[in-house]
Image 1 (cartoon, rainbow, N blue to C red):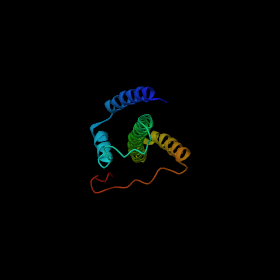
Image 2 (cartoon, helix red, strand yellow):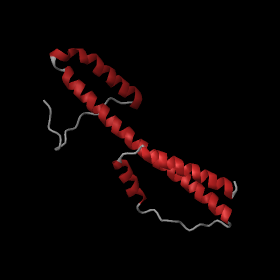
Image 3 (tube, helix red, strand yellow):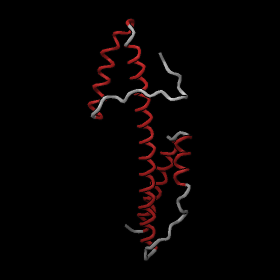
Length: 135
């Protein structure tokens, strides 16, 4: 890769970064900004030439974008999982009531799906101080 190729790749990475940031929530942006707060502005480069430095900088930019995307996607996956558990817990609770007995099959299907995906049944519901206990 020469300096021109590295410059083109950096342009694409910058465009991808801008596009990706456009999909992020304020909270996701704040999390990434906090994560990068201690990153050095520019690391000392051990490269022997300008071309090697450009290649190293390009590789670092690609790695940072990939890590940022992974971090945001992991957070979204965790959030979706928690929301799915909330739906499961609500359905489980409703299925205990005679007028919602038809939900029992759905709750069982959700339990089997969780077990199939994760290798264990859904975790027991925990009630924290901020969430009023449902009865």
